[in-house]
Length: 245
Ligand code: SAM
Image (cartoon, rainbow, N blue to C red; front, top):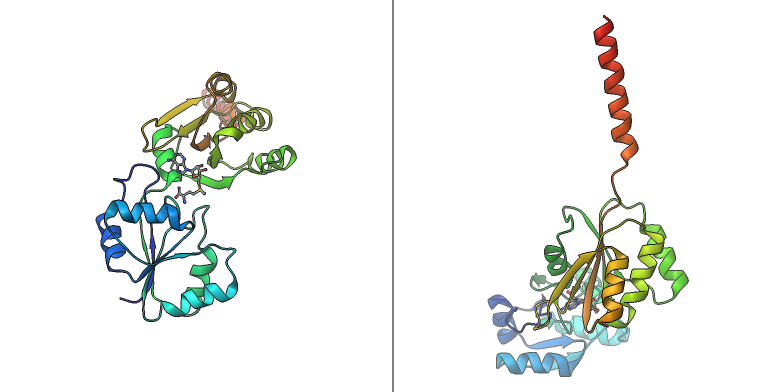
């Protein structure tokens, strides 16, 4: 039926698309996508042929409003090049405006690099903070890491091969003593996940320049030792009192 369907697509392995996603893609009236060539390839692989409309968050307001108006009587799918739309990908403005205008919206879950990386890393994932891409400039990158230093959760970033070494160096400098995990080429032929200190990983990746797409994760800050020591001291004090009485 008419409305907006947010559909997750694979992040590498083309098998990672849900039955429901394929069904919605087959039935829809058209697909709004970042790059018509990328989405065209996926649809071709699935044996589906649909009108493709280029859309991103920089699209003109007029184009967005026209797309939203069409959702009143057409089923429009939103996909990004890979993974879950809106997660470091376009779509936020489209969903916000469509919601304001009372369009039916539904989201079909599927592949997402943040979640896939976290599950492989071995780092605690009961709480995590996803912070998107680190800035490119040294000063800004250091500032963001300093801002995140007190956050008591695993930190997750999207990263690219050419920038990984700089990020590892910045983490070593600004967040000393943390464990880091690098998940690369997830779901693809050369998938790998390495966990260690930033220095160990930096040494490895200087020898083996990392290619492809990366999820970079940083362990939470170590628990404050002082608290445990305080508790021990209080306990000893209490025991002393008990013996005395
Ligand atoms: N929306 C996507 C998702 O749900 O994961 C993310 C889009 S973002 C523009 C692209 C970034 O996601 C890459 O630079 C990389 O950090 C991460 N990524 C995407 N696919 C990946 C993969 N197969 N392995 C590791 N990281 C990946």
